[in-house]
Length: 588
Image (cartoon, rainbow, N blue to C red):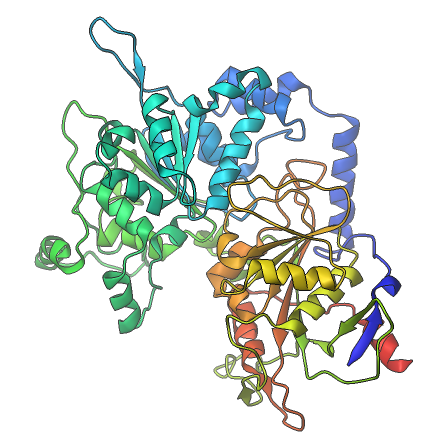
C-alpha cells in the first residue's frame, strides 16, 4: 500500500484555474477597487431600501453584516416579488442569496395584528418558511439573530421561531402559544405534527396566514422526473413526501393568488404545443382529485386575502412548474390570466436557451479521484498517512453522436466495495490525502446518508484530519485553523458555511443524481464568500469513487460511468487533480 507521511504534505496556496487567468485578474481588480473605496453605510442601506425593505431593517442589515455591500442580482429580483401580491417560483444558482432574500422580504412585510374589543392588539403568525432539514432552519435563525440588535435578543421569539424534529414538542407549542411569531421556520414533518395537535391550526395561524414559502421546493415535494417510470409514479402517489402532504393540507383550506383551473401545458411549454380540446381539459380537471388525492385549487372569495405561495430552488425546473400549474393548479405561471398574480423568475438563463452547464456557477472547479486496488510497498513510518492507489477519472464516453452516452469499455462493479451502510476506509484515506495535498483551510466532506457520522469522524481524526461535525440545531462556528466540516449529504441542501473552498463527495451515494449534485456542489463558490459580497470566490468539488479493482480487465467501474454520465448531463468538464506527490512517491 502506498504510504505517505502526513507531515511531508505541504499546504498549497493560490487560486484555482476556474475561469481563466484573465477572469481571475479582473475579479481581483474589482475586489481591490471595492476595498479601496467601500460604500458608506447609508449607501448600502439605500440599495436595499430601493428593493422595498424597511429603512430600519436595511440599516440593521448593513450594520450587523458589514461584508454585505450590495444586493445580489437574485435578491434584486426576489425581494420585490415577495413584497408584491403575487405567487412566485424562483430558479437561481446556489449561493446567490435566495434564502437570505426570502428572510429579508418576509421581515419587511407588515406584522399581522388582531384587534379585540376592549383589549390590546394580539400578534399572529404571518408567514411559514418550510425547509427540508434542521440545518437549514437553524441557518435562518442564525441570520435573524445576527441582524437583531443585541439588546433586543430576548424579543427574537416574537419575530421568528423554529419548529423542527428533535426539539421538545411541548416547549415549541408553548412558545407558539405565549409569543406568536411573525415568521415560523419549520420542517414539514414537525409542522404536520403541530397541525394534528389540538388547536394546532390556530397556533400556526393557518386560516389567516399571508405567505407560505417552500425553500428548496423540489426537495420538499420529491416529484418524479419529466419521464418517470411506472414504479416512480406509483411510489410518488403511494408514499407522498411530507412536504407534499403539508402543501396539500394547506391548499385544501386556502386559496392562492394564481390558483385556478389546471392548464395542461404549464411548465412544458413548446412553440408547437397546442391547447388541448375542451372535453380533455374538463375530464382531467374533474378527475384529478380522484386520481391523485390532491386538493383542487380553492376559489378566491371576496373579502378574503389569498395565500401567497412561494417556491424557490436552484433546480426549480419545468417538472415543478408543471406540477404546480398542470397537475394541481395551485400556482400557475406564464398564463395571460395570471400575469399580474404569478411570476416565474429564472436567474440561470436556462429558460432562454443557456446550455446545461449554466445550472452550476462557472467559478466551481470539478474533479474526480478514483481509488483503485491498493499496492503494498512495505511498512509505514510511525504517524504516516496510509493511502490507496489514486488516479484521476478517465474519459468514459465515445464523444459526440448517437453513441455519446455509451461507454467505450465494459462497465464493471467494484468487487470489494463494502456494504452501503459500512464506512469505506480506502475512500477516507483518499479524502485525508486530498485535504492535505490541496492545503484546504475550510472544507466540507459529505458522506453517504447511511454512514455513521461519529464513526467517520473517529476514522478521519485517526488519520490526522481536523474534523468538526455539523450538528443540527447548532450554528456552525468559524475556526481560524484548518478544518474539515463533516455532514451527511442528505442534509446539505441550502446549507451556507462561510468561506468554504472545497467540497468532498465521498462515494457515489453522496453524489446522488444531477439535481442533488447541483445542490451539494453549490456549497462552494457562494456570493459573499469572498471579500466582496457581490463576487463569488472560486471553489472546488472533489468526488472520491471506487474503481472496479479487477486487475487485467480493461473496463470502467460502474461508479465512474454514472458520474461521467452526470457530468455530461450538467455540461461539466472535470479537471485533473494534482497527484504529483503520489507520482513522486512511486518514483522514489
